[in-house]
Amino acid sequence: MDEFVRTQIEPLDQVLDVNVFESPTGALKSLVDSLKQEVKDHDLWACHLDPDLGGQGYGQLKLVPEPSPPACARAT
Image (cartoon, rainbow, N blue to C red):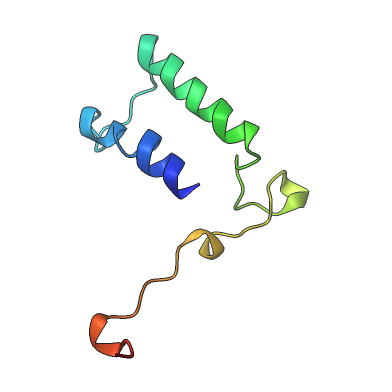
């Protein structure tokens, strides 16, 4: 999932104004629809929702990667 977000989703931030939401049209809509379908194909659509709501039950906090300890706290 991390690789998908890093390689497929985050690059869109470079070409879209993330401060303005407009429903996508044309080629952008096709791109967004294909990305949504890929997420659904991997059973990750709404994965933070409980299964009774159609999700995988990961919860929002379980999706956040744990931070690495600071260098000064690592054993040498």
